[in-house]
Amino acid sequence: MARTPGVGCADRVLSHAASWFSFRAHLLHPIGESKLHYLLEGGGIANHIEIENKEGDIINDSGHGLGWQVGAGLGVSLSDRFRITPSIRYRTLSRDFDITKVKTEVDLNYLSVGLGFNWLF
Image 1 (spheres, helix red, strand yellow):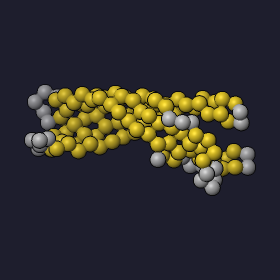
Image 2: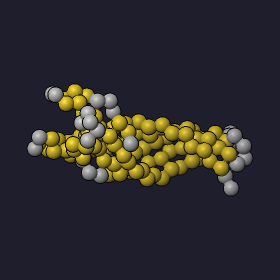
Image 3: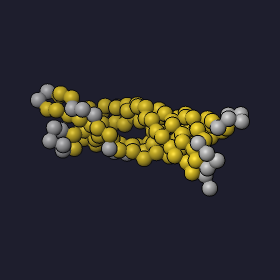
Image 4: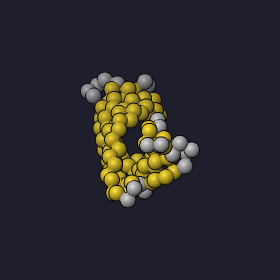
């Protein structure tokens, strides 16, 4: 669960947490005769956002919704059967919150980095 540092809101300190599931399709294609491969990917995320008070109690939850993601990376073959693939992804999600009886749209946009290890059979 990702967390942000607390922010002040009147007499309270609030933070938010998000948990997610992702699904994606990717293309990993060799670059000429080298040991490098480029990676392109796209897909979706199922995510929700929680707002917590300073005691850690959940005071608002957006409920799960669907967002999307795109990514790119570079695969490096270290042997005939082993490859590492660093990558970066852009993820986005829009959810509605009812804050003091006012519907407010919250956009969660972020970059994530990854490192994949592949063993080829």
